[in-house]
Amino acid sequence: MTKVTINYLGQLEQFAGRPSDTREFRARIRLPDLLAELAGHYGEDFRRMVMDEAGRPRASLLIVMNGEAINRASDPEFKDGDEVTLLPPIAGG
Image 1 (tube, rainbow, N blue to C red):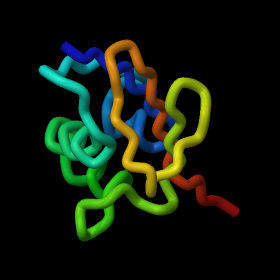
Image 2 (tube, rainbow, N blue to C red):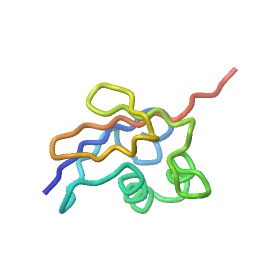
Image 3 (cartoon, rainbow, N blue to C red):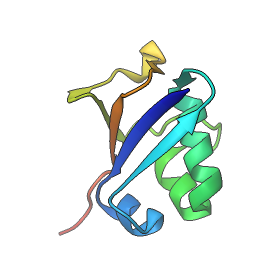
């Protein structure tokens, strides 16, 4: 089993209804699959914040894995015990 903790910041915390979550998967999971799983659980507003129309992670989404920003192009694979933080862009005036 692979257990991943996900921290939600900004509007994602509102859409998720909680500041963090721990998910279990049967095997290691890649970033697009993790985001699709979360979007399926938390709904369309969450999906629009984390994924583009093609189902890829949004370029504006900051993703931190174990304390370090990750490069989406590397298609990271999460392993048991990893911690992921998702931060959507912040707008305001």
